[in-house]
Amino acid sequence: IVPVDRAQSSQAKTYIENLLYIMVKVSAAAAVILFVASAQAFSPSPLSSNNPSTAGKNGAAPPKSALKSEVATTADPTTSAAAQQQQAPPSATDMASPKREKILKEPALWEYNFGLQDPGLRMPHGIVAGQSAPETYQLTEEQIQVLEEDGVVHIKGVFDPEWVQYLRDATGHQVDNPHFWAFAGTASKLYDYIQRNIWQTNKAFANFYYHSAMGDVLRQCGRTDEIRVSTDLLMVNPNKGFKWHQDNQNGPITWEDGIRFWITMDETPAEYGAPVYLKGSHRNDVVDEGAVFVDIEQNGLEDYKEKLLEFRTMPGDMLIWHPRTIHKVDGPSDGIWTTYRRVLGGTVCKGGTKYQDKRGSGGVLSDLGRHGLEQGDKLKSSFFPVIYPRFDDNEAKERDSGKVGRSPRDIASKLSGLAGKASGDKFASFFQVLGSQAKQ
Image (cartoon, rainbow, N blue to C red; front, side, top):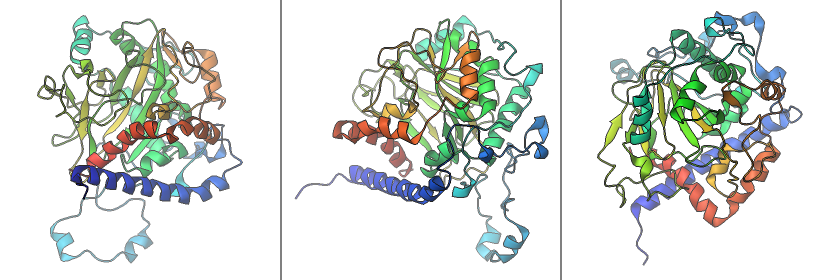
């Protein structure tokens, strides 16, 4: 009789459940894909839901989801009056204890959009998109040294209320008009909404990178003369959260070339949602580079696991950390967010970065574009746009023309290397993060 490790069995079960769920969702989406087969996934498209006649604040379409930092009501505002009348009356139990309702619902398959999207937002501070120089923000030497010593630093109030509202409006438009490239992440149930490389499809986020002080802040953190966006993520409400992990979805770069960032749009709840980091853990030499999920009880992490740094971020704050710094975010125990936790995050790279071909490993998931770069090439491409010292006009034009992005053929080609057992074992670490949520 072979002894069964219950923990591993539970992880395997959760892995299979998540995989099957995504497979079912993808099968259902096949009909949608066939319907839009003639559309270019990253070319300007009438499916982008940009109707200027419905413009609201800042020239953007008024968000149906009303993305504000407030508690959700139990009624779903997207439900018609007739549909609500058909709903069964609440039970005595429901009346005694109101049911917690998610503030954001998962999009239906037919709600996903293709092509480039432009909310049409006016930029803060009189900035003219595509013309004005990027803003600046001065860090102290002490803040930079904290990042280097602790592996993470919290910079408060980098972005004023105008910028915060701009990001909230951009996020509201995106959630109300979900893009197809958010489908897999949303189907995974990791977040209420999550989309990688949001700047490639949503012009408001590209303009934010081009014109805000983000590039200036990060170039100081990296002590470098150039900053390029390697990959990014728009993340709304992390359900039950992410347990202890390191970030290896940083694009085609090395650990040392990358700088991780978070820009928060909402106040962190008092009970949950605050990121927690292991101080100095970016210096550890025991966690495998291909791992995502980290067991902090493993040998070699004794010097870090008790040194916890927790950050209750506020709107306009930035968190900046080394990609190897071990951290976690705990969500509500039931996975139901009744308020918003909106974050724009990702990885930038320093000047002189060389392209790293990560085919055959899970790291390829953050490098699915047809940019033509090969191992060792200088990372200079419109797929990884420069944002400091200034955005590049030609790179911006290529992005706006739809040249920058992903296609099913690119994805199939780059993911083919994951079929091998060794790379499959490394890739499975990502699903351990999924499985870790079920243990709460």
